[in-house]
Length: 365
Image (cartoon, rainbow, N blue to C red):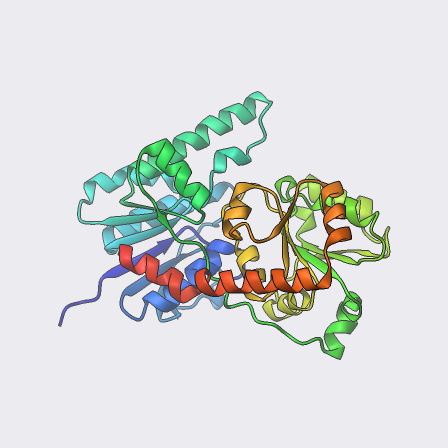
């Protein structure tokens, strides 16, 4: 009997998934691929009493390093080196382990599937010398990881075109699944915890970063007092988020700034009962939070950038600032919102299921 091909998944905090898009991707890849392959998932530093040997029928390999902050590059690099010796196919999410990629030349029989994650150098604020250096450094990181990978995976057609134009190669388009997000009813207990659920409201979920454009929503709803806005974010991670929370929290009765919700059932309750979902990201590919909202059948309004138009197949409504958003809301009626919700759900069921996404990765293995 032939032994199973050995697959490693590198570049996340590990399992069980608790964080963002890459962690959720690792979760569903491990769950679905472990049916046919011997899967190992590399995991961040974890207290001994919380360590698991297996999850999703996959082996967990813990490192004494954290997946975030200054340790992240060392964490990913060591994971890659270990995986080159012990597995056949490496699925690497993001380029933190860039310095280990060139070692791939000594392991000719290994295969690297590299998910580029996004155009990271575009997310650096230009203007200062340090920023210019960081941009060039991230461009170099990107070049190295692409050079030493066998398959480049992107999550948006705009990124596919970027890789084609920059490196003259075809990448593989594999977005994210969102069908794990389920509608949840409003219970008495959840309304007591989140009183805004008792009324009609619109919602957005994102990290507190400038490229998420949360301020546009707040500025619009300061003037649209007949609608309620709920923004769920990790406000304390940036000066941008801290300032928004300090300036606007509890200052307007129709604007609710909520701390990040990591309980998926609670988050799904907040999202699935909203009247409108806002996707405000401007520097991402196909965002997991967007496809989850689409899978929930919500009418989604998007910040107007090519990646968001690609993800929604130009079938959403788009805004660029608070004035264009106000204009949108003043002109959209309930029938148009219902039609929008139907369109978003149809796209999601066709493109953003974990079965489809996993099958794309499977074909590359």
